[in-house]
Length: 269
Image (tube, rainbow, N blue to C red; front, side, top):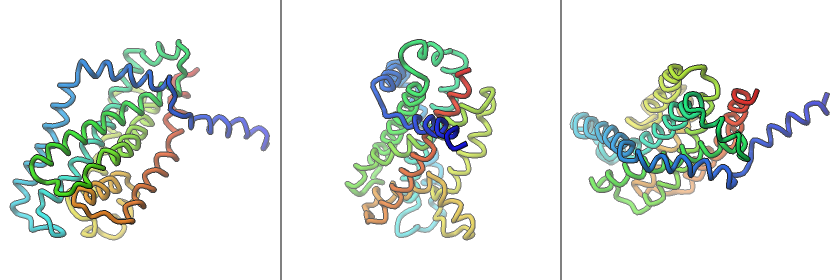
């Protein structure tokens, strides 16, 4: 019985494949397509977060007292950067990946080459991470121009956005490996992404919530991203930030095989 379980364990371990040149070719292929649509992508990624920042910061912020020694606009700005990056990765590896897989049959065409499916999925995750970093960095630049990024430690924000992008790209790709049709992604955004958007400390400190909700929020990856970005933006850097980084790394490593396994089960008959 133990011997029979070994091949399965070996197969599961094989999903931790390194990023190799074939996965990078998949990433490069998506990047070439992005070169033709980058203006549309960036306009959407810039306008929506800025609307949140304007409506909540300039509007609601006039009714809210300073939070933890900062204005409400300055408080939510790091969270807007984090959520912009989250939405970019989640959208790319859900709707866009599903279109490439199901409608355009691009995955089927690629696996007919020396590139295997696991490398295709890894390339997709890398591309989702790229979109996350790009979106978050653009918003960070705009926020900095508005004078809401007072610390040079904010230069490390793109590094944190890499963790953000990989975490949410994986979550989205897991859903892509499960749903039977594109309409089902509405459940992913309603039941997974939106609760993180609302209860990860983006718009208010979590200590105003009941203790049980604070503990649940702690389990959300976006909570740790927001905590890191807010600290870097304000220059509140301490050894405690390494705990958030460690949590994200463990989360990413634990769930990494799941999109590989689910996409393999779905496409390899």
